[in-house]
Image 1 (cartoon, rainbow, N blue to C red):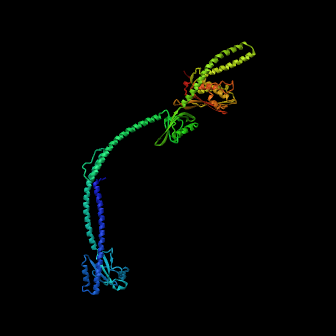
Image 2: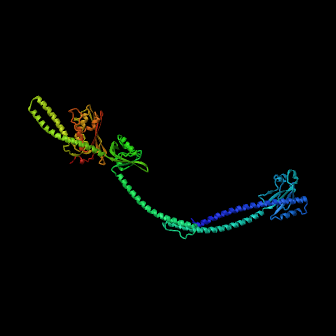
Image 3: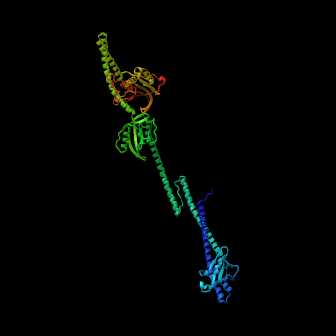
Length: 636
């Protein structure tokens, strides 16, 4: 595509505009001159007609010595354009014409022309101009009226006929031609001068614009030190000075911008590194960190919280309070309300949250409120204290049981020494007497002594003074072997039900202690169902948070449909010698022994009971998946 420089474009635009202006000016001038010439011609024709009418009147009425044609010709000779005169009588007949070439043939039989022969028309006007568009002549009609008489209805006799003066339009045309030629010549001269001036101006502007274009190209290529030289002392020079000043400012600003950009890049890099470190700390923190809005919806949480509720799907716009156990929701809501009200309370609060289906975790929460661009935010820190709480409870119970165990161990040794004397001597008495009463009394002593020996044996087991041997074994195998012998312990009116669903049933165990634990649980269930019922053994696997990781556990659930345990007795059932049976029925060491076995196997035990509906014991042991080669492997 052809490219034109700015000077050429400027010159072309100037010439086009100048041409349009000159054409419009010429048209307006010629039109105005034509109108002026036509008006002057009509005015002259009216004047000539009126003079000719006067001459005719003198000729007709006063019988002038100069013939009419000579007098009229003498008048016309004074004009610088061709004129013809024709007279018409009142009947419309032509009386006189000067030349046939410029004669107007008027048909006075025509309705319009008949009006001209009536004196009423000339009462209000003294001439009529006729300018036909299709002919090259101009006609003026003037009435012939007695001198000094004004036409009225009573002076109509003064109207003697019509005088028609004919003019040629060639005169107007010639005048217009002369004017047009003059205007065209003047326009050409003006256009030539304007074009030359525009060419000079375009060259001058083009050089400056070329310098500006060169400077812009230098700037674009990165040469910010380029400046325009050879500056003139005028407005264009001021423009060049302004460009140089602008260039200097841009160069300085660009230098500052580069420095600020480098500084900003360094700051951004540091911010990103700091953000990465903070995010790493948050995501890898041992505590769960959450951000909540004022309504309690979770807007941010770290990986630790995801692990804490790993079995649950965190729905969008989930509310934190939905994860709090029902019993603890009022306390947590009250804590948040006080925090949002500006309370200075910063102490931790402990409660349970849902960690999965039928799974709960104990947590300790601290929180604070702050504001950001999204509004007020509540920052929550959750620490999983499930294991710590269990360990604390176990520690308290273990210390208590240890104290009781030491006492029971000491008492059992001393009591066993006494029984070692009582039982042999009572047997000697029975061997050396035949007295019925003495034998009866001695049997009672031996029976009581043997029961006392059983109690001592249970006390020794409870006090852990018997060495335990742990082996990797199948928990289901042990249960099945024990349940085969349950028929001797459980009457027929008690229905025994099993439901073993645990896939991982291996564990480290002392077989004898596990057997004793299961038997004691079965005896407790049997005694709570004197009228019969259902005794059910169930197993399954669950995963809980233990030692800061998910641990697979095997759950043993032993439930009955007996009389249940009163709520006030539940905290005491694992204490030694706690017994609600009649005197002489039970030792109060059965469930204490169960608790002792669970602790020795690092397990967890819990109990639920409803009076009149039954009792359920839930025991958790750490599960392992056994290979055949690992079964019955002894752990020293």
